Amino acid sequence: MLSLLSVGLLSTIAIAAPTPKAATPAPAPDAKVSPANYLLLHAPERRVRGADPRMQSLLAEGLHRSRTFAALVNQINRSDVIVYIESVMTLPKATMGRLAMMPMRGDVRYLRVQIRADLSRAEGIALIGHELQHAIEIAGADDVRDTAALVRLYERIGHPSAGDHAYDTNAAQDTGRIVRRELAQS
Image 1 (cartoon, rainbow, N blue to C red):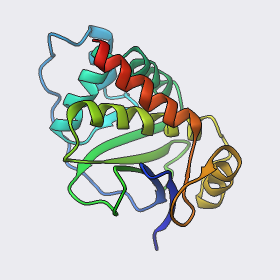
Image 2: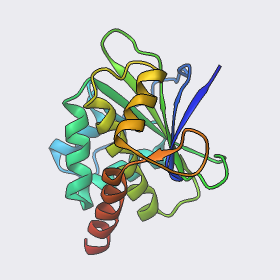
Image 3: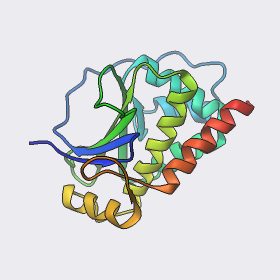
C-alpha cells in the first residue's frame, strides 16, 4: 500500500517500494562542469542521482549555473540520504513534482523525486532545487525513518497546501525562487 504526503502543489512525499534499475554508464565529462561537480554527478558514492539522461543534464546545468543548487547537492552529499531524480510523463493534476520516501537499507534513507517531463529546463532545475530542499529537510530530521515520522515532520515545519496531507515549506518555496533567479542571471 502506498501512503502519500503531499508537499505543496509542487511536490508529494510518499513511501513506496524501490524500483530496480539497470546500471547505466556515466556520460563523458561535460566541459561546463567542474571536476568537483562532475564527481558530484558521477562518483559511485554520490548522493544525488539522475535516473535518466535528461535529469543528468538538468543536474549538470543546475550545478554549473546556480550556486544555491550546487550547495544543495553538496549538503545532501554529506548526509545519510540518497536522492534519485527521474522525469515522468504523468503526475496527479496540479503536481509538477513529488518526493517519495523509499524503504531504508541499512542506515541509508532513499528518496525518489519525480519531475514532470514537459517542464522547461529552467522550470525543471528550479523544481529540482525545491525538491532537494525538501530532501535536506528530511536529511536534517534523523527521526524520519517511516511515514508517520514524515507526516509529523511536515505537520511541524510545513504549512497546509491543497489536498490530503498536503504541505509545503517556506524554505522549499524560497529555494525554488532563488535557483530560478540565479538561472536567469547566468
